[in-house]
Length: 358
Image 1 (tube, rainbow, N blue to C red):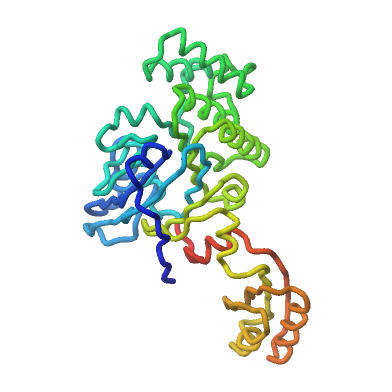
Image 2 (image 1 turned 30 degrees about the vertical axis):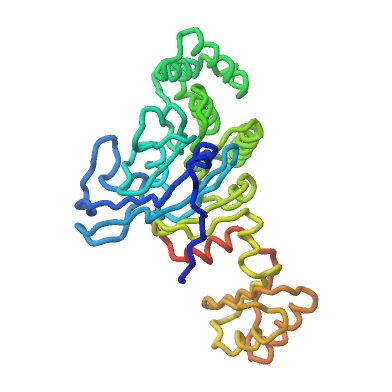
C-alpha cells in the first residue's frame, strides 16, 4: 500500500542542542549485496548490520535508510518499529557511530555523530539482545572496567559500579561470573554497564528478545524507572505490546522510510475504528458478503483475507447482528466472530503488510 510519509518540521540548531536524537535526511546506501557466504569481521555478514538483508540482485545498490527525519525529545522513551530489513539496525548503527551515513546528519545529545564520533560515544550507550558481557569477568568487573575504558578514575569507576549494582538489585551477584547468570539477569547487568558512564541517550535494541515473561516484565519496570529518572531511551522491539506499554511515541519504518509517527493512542486511532470485528467463515467468501457489510451504517471499511473478514467500524451496538444478517443474506456460513479494540499490531500490519520476512 502507498503511505504518505509523516511530516517532520525542520529542526533548528537550537532545537538540536535540546533534543536527545535528531536525524536530518539520514540516508544509508550500500553499494551492493555481498556474495552468498561472504562474511566480514566480528561474526556479522558483510553489508547492512543486524540482519537488515535487502532482497536485491547481488551488485545492486541497497537503500537501507532513505532520507529519515526524526526527532527524539530529551527524556523521552521512544519506540522504533519495523519488520526485519526495515532499516532499524542500520539507523541505530549510524546513530551509535558504527555505520557511516551516505548522506544527511545525525545528532545524539546535540553532538554530530559523523563529525565527532569519539565525543558522541561518550554521550550514548547501546544494549543489544546479544549478550556482550566479558564472560571471563565477574559482574562487578564488567562494570568497573567499562568505567575505566571511558576514562573514569579507579575510585570513581569502583564507586559507580557499586552504586549501579545496588540500584539494580545485583548485590548477591556482584562477584558471580557473568556466564552463570540467567538471560534476564544478564540483560540487567548489560543495562547497568551501559549506564556506568552516564550516557545522555540509551539505545535498547530488542532487549527482551528470548526472555521469559517474568524477566521481560522486570525489564519493563526497569525501563520505566530509568525513564522516570530522566533517561532518554530509544527502544526497538518486535513485541507490539511492549512498545504500547512503554513508549511515549512510536515511529514505524519500512524499506528505510518513515511510515508513521505518533503516540500509541494516536497510532491506534489512525486505523479509523473504535472497534474491529473479525469474522471467520467456513470457506473463502465470494465478495457478496463484503459488499453487504460495507453498506452497513458506521462501517468504515472491510478487509478480506481468505476466510477472514475484518470490519472496522465506529459503532458497536447492533453491529454484530447486522453483520450476521449480511452473511446470511449472502449465503455465507459463520464459523467465528470476535470484537476487539484497535491494537498497535493492527496499525503495524496495516502499514508494513502481513507477508513473512525471514
